[in-house]
Image (cartoon, rainbow, N blue to C red; front, side, top):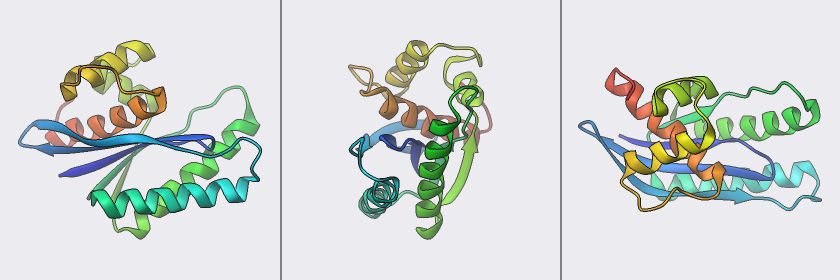
Length: 160
């Protein structure tokens, strides 16, 4: 199965595509969609939509794993990230992907073994699971791959 993981964001949206076959995972591609900071939000959302549509068309995933939002402080940031998440979800829906949502704690527990894992621990486990020489950069890219790996592990019926 091919999975695209999404770490939603308006300025930087991370994506990571993996193949999960017979308990093994392999990196297909990963990166970020960036939008300029002072661009109006509707234009930024359109760029996210266009870029994700292209990425999905090129990589042909069957599933999308997207991080659920969790914000406690900045409501303005939360709203714009939620809008980017909505665009990403819609893009996946239009491409007929099966869409799965995971909380940050579910992702951390699946990847690092416990829900309070710190970002560097999760990133290192992403690197190890995919057999990479370096941690994927930027962080948004590694976070998207963590979402995709979480889905692969959940589909296997257990977390690593």
